[in-house]
Image (tube, rainbow, N blue to C red; front, side, top):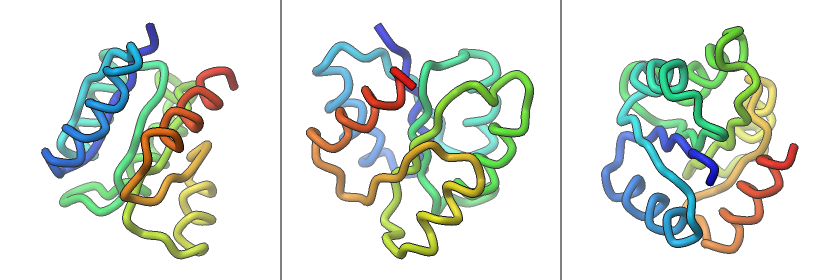
Length: 121
């Protein structure tokens, strides 16, 4: 089954996303910061990354940009999952290399649809 890396500084958000994904057979790993997200993406080589934007240290935009420019991780699709719902945020997220964008709170149906669409990509 597909391995998903959840990068979010909120234990509650990680718990919610992990619950939705594991229920459908996904294997989840997590990172509480952008820096840890980069480390885990390199070492674990997940099939997909869910990326929060607002985090201390490296934010999700910076982390996404680094991952999509790194030879070791650029093939991994990234879906931004954020409370930032402005069109400018979505456009900027895609410019950093994200493949998709979800606004929190996410529904299980939306999450699964985006994850499955990007895994087939």
